[in-house]
Length: 106
Image (cartoon, rainbow, N blue to C red):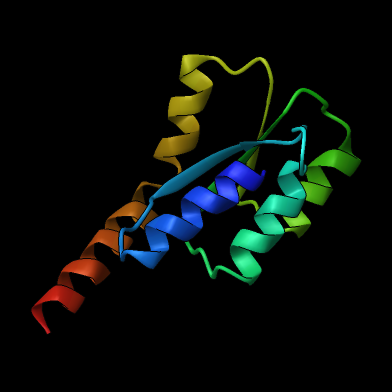
């Protein structure tokens, strides 16, 4: 969690955008939902956040979503499941790239 926050913070500080963050629920220093809350709140990260958990309990899924995750994937994650997830955000990725291009022109 703390590493993910540091990475997002560093990239945003230098004006680099990030399309997607995949973050696990259980981590050592800070759990995924706590990290997502900071990314969305303090860092104003507006990219896609996909939470990953091995626990399919509705409580865990709801916690991730309430903190700002866009989608939750339950382990084990197959290549197909990951690609389907990424594809579901294709319009958002395209819109973000278009917005960046317009900002660069103006």
